[in-house]
Image 1 (spheres, helix red, strand yellow):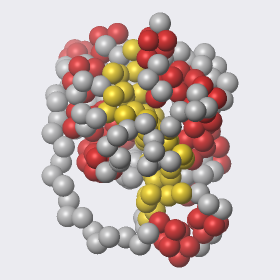
Image 2 (image 1 turned 180 degrees about the horizontal axis):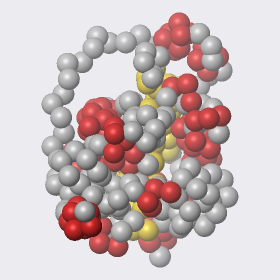
Image 3 (image 1 turned 30 degrees about the vertical axis):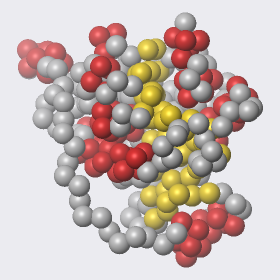
Image 4 (image 1 turned 135 degrees about the vertical axis):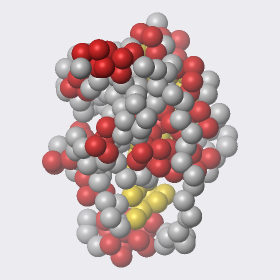
Length: 284
């Protein structure tokens, strides 16, 4: 058993092709209309002036909220959440913990960007455009949902205004989605992995030329996930491993697995600097 585990840990992760595209459903209703039809709290979100590019309450739900003006943005950050994220937690966070909410994280990043450069033309998207796995399940240990999510993310990014540079930011399992999508998106300048179990790649060089950044806090339990790849099981080498070749991001002030984009963490302003293209300062 010990020999087998050693072999698994040392086995490099293969470069995976994305799954065939599934037939696309008929066009959904515009997001404000769908949100009004879905009732509360979604109807209130629409009435308050929040802007959603997509919304679908079916199943665990889908949503994409934008902060800032996509039409004039020079730089766009797309946040992809991880395991257990559902539409019902989009605003309140898993278990009612706000720092886990994609919408809350997007607002924190947008505020950090505005603080760093008040005149920058930026937009931040909280993208829940796929069905993340539930809990510490077999689906969470496999890459199948990430591959489906990557195909949807590729379509989404390709539809963004062409003038803008795009940074993909994946948290936990969402980093795997980002890692599988990035090689198919040459317009992506930077990939940021926060608390990532793996990116589905052997090295940063396999991600299509984007700069790759990684933050893994000392107290993040994701460190206990084995670095292995056996077929669709496992996510390969962690981007925080020196051999992967990612640029490290500071993690001072990060608590646990969900605190990377919390105000007061060192990671939040560093990610903002990456989005703004101030990579020399971050790398230094």
